[in-house]
Amino acid sequence: NRGSWLDFEYDAKDLLYFRIDRKRKLPITTLLYAIGFNRKEILETFYEFKNYKFDKQKNLWEAKFNPQDYKRPIKLKNDLIDSSSNKKVLKKGSKINLVIAKKLFEQGLKNVSHGSDYFLGKYTKKDLKNPMDNEIFARSGSALNQENIDHILEYKIQDLEIADIDPINKGPYLVDTLNIDKNNTKEEAINDIYKVLRPGEPPSFDVAKDIF
Image (cartoon, rainbow, N blue to C red):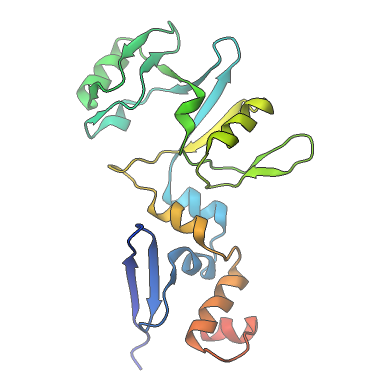
């Protein structure tokens, strides 16, 4: 017995799946759960995160400016604003690359500011909660929508950790897959895999674990 075949594939929505012995596909994050990762570890292993702090006086979010973020040339989706002077360094739509970014850094650009709409579609590292009742309104790894941003401002949340994701350097494929995965634990994932490998048999975690 040479073991089982393990195949990987993307679907039309760029979600990542795996198949064992060409049976029914499952989200790749189910496999990660099954080998011992939890949600936090999946996010931290495959993504880097930036810290943003809210400046009450400016009503803007501040983050460190890192020239390495521009190793590949891009067009800015938002104005590049110097936090120290509150001046616009580059306009939205301007091209920026590593050379330009390094020059700006050498000229004193150390921190940049963003409006709250900057976070639309961005992925949060941690669960975001209502401080009054601790209810989660945005789960870790989820993409923020306008309602989430309204809650962030309403609940006066002043620190955010946001995944460093863009379609050029590191896409959202894995985190998007994580968000459609109905499994959340090692036991759930292994039982799900067992049901694919042994359809019709009642799942038992101990038995499933031994087979997996």
